[in-house]
Structure formats: structure tokens, C-alpha cells
Length: 241
Ligand SMILES: C[S@@+](CC[C@H](N)C(=O)[O-])C[C@H]1O[C@@H](n2cnc3c(N)ncnc32)[C@H](O)[C@@H]1O
Image 1 (cartoon, rainbow, N blue to C red):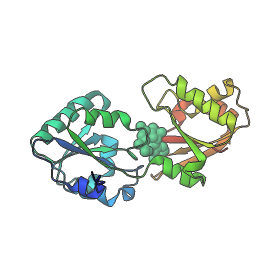
Image 2 (image 1 turned 135 degrees about the vertical axis):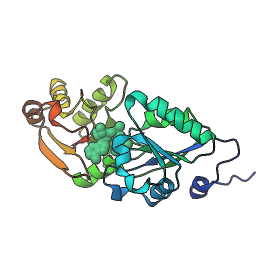
Image 3 (image 1 turned 120 degrees about the vertical axis):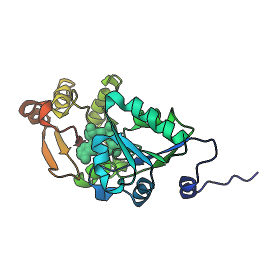
Image 4 (image 1 turned 90 degrees about the vertical axis):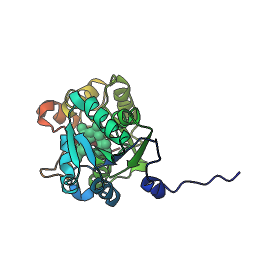
């Protein structure tokens, strides 16, 4: 038997199979519209319906003029995705937009789409994690990535964070959780867990967007000089090894 690997490009361009309901998830990047991929742009320009959180859709308005555009919020995302799935069943080309890249802290949205249709085509993009690596001058292979941006209890990821920081073998890239586990609270918890007050951290805010900024300092400074509300929901932390 010969196993033929499927060409991903051909797969993405396949006409929807008869009776197979398909939606495409397009990742839009970390905020600067110029970081959208050519493939993402192509799919958006050919879409009948584009849905996503409002801030995500705002990144791609230049390419959605011909489509029906439905913004969603956390409270009505199920209703909007149901509507998109219903349109997809009627043969419409439906796109769900996701922030950053699809492989970084985007599982919940992907699962919601997967539950609704037979096939989900994915168009990846650049993650905020990659921009943070670039700004910090580090490579992914030297780093560990941890996200607190999830619904489950954060105790597990926080314990992992403490473990890797104490080990000091790898840089740590951390996505905080808006708005209860932001950099100031994280710094306080790290100090309580026994990390040295002089341990340095960087907080990048609004990477690739207007008003981008970087704060560098110690855990002690982060814990005492700031409150969580001082940080944008678009914040990412880097701890150099
Ligand atoms: C649910 S996660 C999704 C991450 C996204 N899939 C990605 O690849 O960037 C959202 C979090 O990513 C981080 N983030 C996303 N874009 C950012 C940006 N432009 N600057 C800083 N942090 C960002 C923030 O911590 C934000 O709360």
C-alpha cells in the first residue's frame, strides 16, 4: 500500500465536498494588519461570512468588505458560531478569525468551531510569542512557553512557571490571564514561591501595535510599583534564563 502525503495547499483549496460542512479559521497575527499571511488575505477576500471577536475583526477590515461580517463577544459567541455553521451547511464560505497564531493559546475557540462542522481548514499566522522572542532576542528552542490564559485552575501552570524559573535552564515566555493574573499579581506569587526579589522580568505590551511598550525590571519592582490594571490585556512576559 502506498501512503500519499496530502499537499496542504491543495487541501486548503479543495472545493467543499458535497455534504461535508466546512469552515476555515484564519489567524490574523498579533495586531499589525501587515503581518497577515497572503493565504489569510486570499481566504478572507473570498469569504461570504466572516465572524470573530470585534478586536480581531478590526485587524482585517481591509479584506472583508465583500463579506457579511458578524462580530461576537464571549456572551454570544455560541450563537454567532451556530449561525456561521448554519450558513456553512448552506454552502456559504465561512471564516472564523482568531488572534495571533492558531497553535498558541487558541484551543477553546478551535474546539468550538470543530464541534460544529465536519471539517475545519486552518490558516496559521504569526503569534505574539514570536514577536516577543524577536524583541527579546531569544529563540523558541531555548525557551519554555506557558499560558495562564485558560479557564481551568491556574495552579498547575503557575507551579510549572516556578519550576522553570528556579531551574534557570530556559527562558520562559508567559501569557498572563486578563485580568486576575496579570504581571503584578504574577510577580507577587513568584516572590511568595521563593523566587529572588532581584529576578528580572520583561513585560511587552501591544506588540506590533501603536503604543507598543516594554517594561524591564525586577520581580520586587513589578510587584510593588504596579497593579494588574496598569497592564493592557495584550501583555506578554519574558523571563531570561
Ligand atoms: C488567548 S491568548 C491568544 C494568543 C494568540 N493566539 C497569539 O498567538 O498571540 C491572548 C493573549 O496573548 C497575548 N497577546 C496577544 N497579542 C499580543 C500583543 N500584540 N502584544 C502582547 N501580548 C499579546 C496577551 O497575553 C493576550 O491576553
